[in-house]
Image (cartoon, rainbow over all chains, first blue to last red; front, top):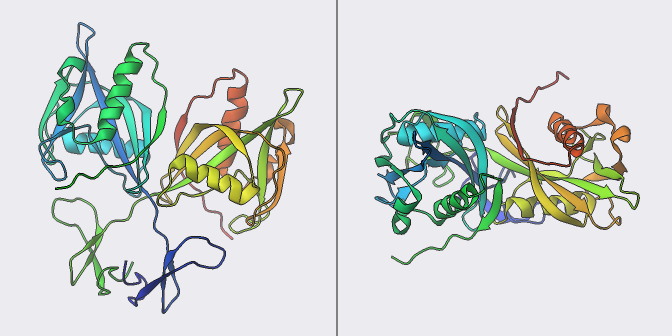
Amino acid sequence: MKFCTYCGEKVSVGIPENDNRERFICISCETIHYQNPNIVAGVLPIYKNTEGEDKVLLCKRAIEPRYGYWTLPAGFMENGESVEEAALRESVEEANLTLDNMQLYTIMSLVNINQVYMMFKADITDKDFSPGIESLETELFSEDEIPWDELAFPIMTKTLQHYFEDRKSQVYPVHNFVHQVQFSKK
Amino acid sequence: MKFCTYCGEKVSVGIPENDNRERFICISCETIHYQNPNIVAGVLPIYKNTEGEDKVLLCKRAIEPRYGYWTLPAGFMENGESVEEAALRESVEEANLTLDNMQLYTIMSLVNINQVYMMFKADITDKDFSPGIESLETELFSEDEIPWDELAFPIMTKTLQHYFEDRKSQVYPVHNFVHQVQFSKK
């Protein structure tokens, strides 16, 4: 941040009165510009076939970062919607999914990139899904078929690992954990 | 938002390519400025006395809005911390609390003010708490003593209601719900 959103003058970095953190402060109108973490909302979509076998839907990414890798549908929560609405919207945008039984499942604080992921477990009620504009493919995978080495993000790996572990007992508590994003050298 | 944070020129409102929402876009450098909901993290601090009786800690607000009303400790999550760390920090800043057994408890999307509250149930392990700079008083209340008519925000009321209801069965699932903030006319 270099300029004030209210008056267009330069901002400086300083600690405001009654605060203990550095903020961007306008040198002219003195507006304090707070910057806070963003929420990424998504789904863990599960399809149960007539034999009772579970499969998880993954999307192959058509966008960077991690183009061509597999992920669970997720994206930035928008103003004016609930976390659950955001997760549902992303499931439609990326995979044209029809879901039911939305249940909050994993909450992950990505502390070094200022994001909080909130993933909902959900049942796919209609197999008529298809790739949205941000996906190359949408496909169902059983546990044995999950392309573990081709998953886009470690937090998606963790969400899937929790699911297959919890599935043994059929009890799905909310998992809240912290994740440090590792950046690979190009 | 009137001016671009990167170049200081004016922004206009428009829908970017491959998007379906209005964003602020710089008329000069064309940077798209996304605006997203903020997380408010807090705690529901519980003190269990030697007779096994539960009391909840509330803070009387020393700041606007709702100066003089009672609330649970909570505040905006900062960059660089986890949701749980944010809740713990607020519990210290507002009530100098020492807590244990943090457990995610209520998640509330305040859709019309673009905030998501995330409250953790926690045990007070040391009765040596005291008001922080944003509190006039800190006090323990049994269910009968809760000042229901003097609570600062409906979402705090709802969190307390869930707690006293769940306490009957001693089972505390995560509650995820949507709340529409009503603004009172002054």
